Image (cartoon, rainbow, N blue to C red; front, side, top):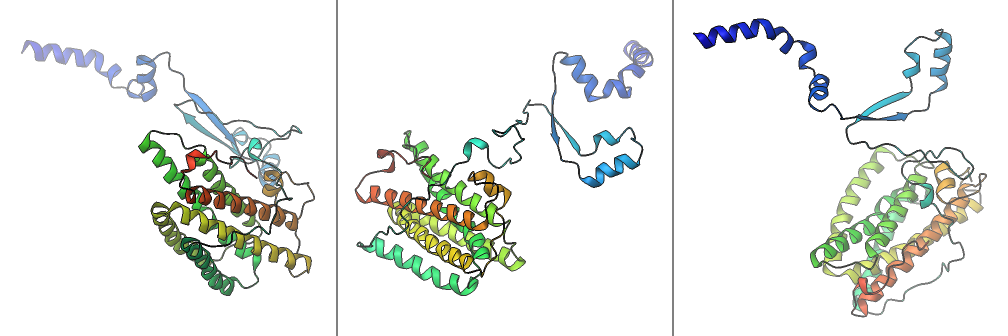
Length: 323
């Protein structure tokens, strides 16, 4: 009885203060327990459209108009967005790549180099690629813009798979990779940037999107198994795939030169990524993409040759930044 009366008296006097909304709020608890904690705020500013600006002007400047086009994200972890500018002082607008990742493509590379298949694995890789070209030509015909966009969804797979497997091997064996993890992932990222560029030129239909899901799923798993079984075969096959890509982009250029495909202005993302002139056209984009494919051809044939010589990739320095 003594305890119950004492408890009731405490609840009457302290209850309202203990269970009030301000006392139970998370901010109150945090401030009382961790007074020194500071929460940083990340502000991502979206560009305001002309409609929003006109609405602001017509409304006479209401108090809440200043928040339009601005999204606040409260971060406990203190991660803040970087504000990056170009050399000319203008704001860098791409979040998928940074200015230090851009480059000028080497257009002087030999486009006619070819690895003549001599061994059985080489011949198997060569004719596998040749057999894949027939249904591709049948489906896309001479729609090279759409063809480039669709094929880049597959071309970015081998570098990612190879880099992932070399990465896991490095972890298992407690050893360095010779830079090949980064080199292969660079290849995958470069191929993905090709896709981001051609998406601005050709828009996929619903059945083409469905085709990408099916083909990518099959190709990823097939290449994954092929790389585990024989890395030299996998790299050789990619080398031949890149040779076919060079041929496809050469035909693309012929169509542009003949006027069968409109030589539209280059997408803004391509101009910044390859450091093209402001008045660059689609033809300039195809030229630099073809040069990229030639470099990927060399890297993968080189990787296959390393394996054919009975060595591992880590024993030969990787061609990081080979563009």
